[in-house]
Image (tube, rainbow, N blue to C red; front, side, top):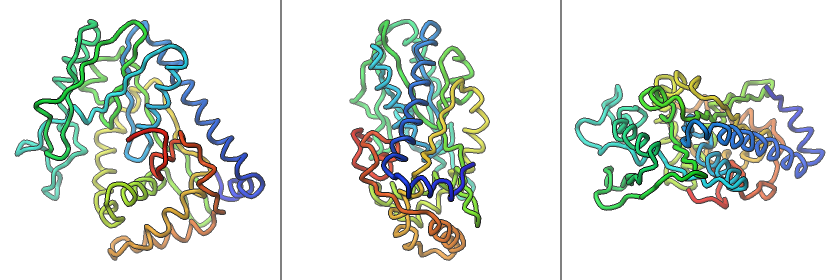
Length: 307
């Protein structure tokens, strides 16, 4: 638990130095994860990286891959989204009758298990490519991958630690990424889930053409999916990364304020008032201090990585 007072003191005293320290602390977590992966290579060259929405899984996977590369290990990152089943009448639906894309039943675990076995044998594997535009697996595109002695494959996705894959492949190293820290403002708590929601709201508005009303309309279903399908399996991870960056609320403040001021649904009014009120307690810090490889760039843009 952090306090807004302690964070603001560091921001006011030396904003650039505080940003640098926070990023260094995250970098050390990534380095430790890379070391754990290398130590596990005698048992498996496969890594299962999971975490809920807004955790920064993709950047974490890329940063881990970079650390591995610095140590002579070639890391290939595969999104579990590519193992989605075609969207059709068999696709699970939620209580509202809408497609439930948070459900693990959307993932072709049988094919994934088959590919795990092929990877372990050193065989060439044709990894599928999911066509999100047509909501189906591409019939012509795929990626050929084969594991060599100094290779690692990182499977990244919300269901990476699900028992249907992690449970039958315990030799693969599990990594769980999530915002685990909180910030006490005196008038309320910025919980990990609220911080992730802010990250996602900014990203949706900037890059996905989705306004805050839409993001909040699906958030309850996202949280429900986390409780059912992600949190129960996080103990399968042998390594955890707290992806909270202590200066991030101060930096995200000018990004999220105009987004939440556009909220039109009366259902979100209490949340909007509460968040905007708590944000007033945070001193601003400039986004120009944020490194190009920061996990926060996944949400505000201008990253060295492609998403």
